[in-house]
Length: 116
Length: 113
Image: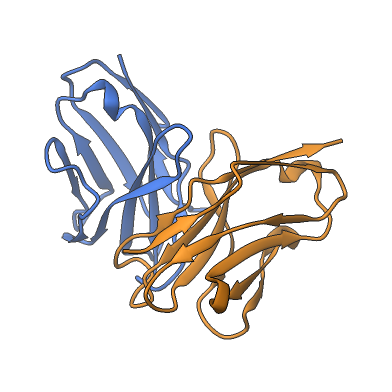
């Protein structure tokens, strides 16, 4: 069974500083990987996805993530954060045989706080 | 913009009552997924449905919970005889195919008195 670990429960970053959110997964083959963002009281919005090909993927809102097979990681990065980036971020993995065949497995999330 | 629509947004039930949560997928999407989110937790997969079929219900509690996605109309997640522990946010997602990204609704917040 797949699993996802987001080691950081909370991260505080100053506005304008760079950001990296960590995500490690456990899966027997190459998975589908996703990052979602959730604002309070809202649903999840897809930031980016990795299915295959280039291991550095670009997403919306200036985010990017890099798939590193050797480290079983899919860390999310942004060069300069904005106050509006404050939210909960979830990493998720889906089965390669079909992204929804087993449903997505989510990490517990990282709460991002932006300091002025 | 026809995104994934869930209703109601908030639902309050007393212990022992039934809760019905509805989800209309995005236009053109025939795959529906239900997830539950408890406080301080990520989302937990419950069930995956296509029209008139349950594909994977490995995350559904064995009792009191059921889901359907009829040929016409929204998908329904039904919780019978609710208990306090059922209080959570329930999210629905849809995709065009099983290997396409899932798009989420804004959820239904279920509170049990």
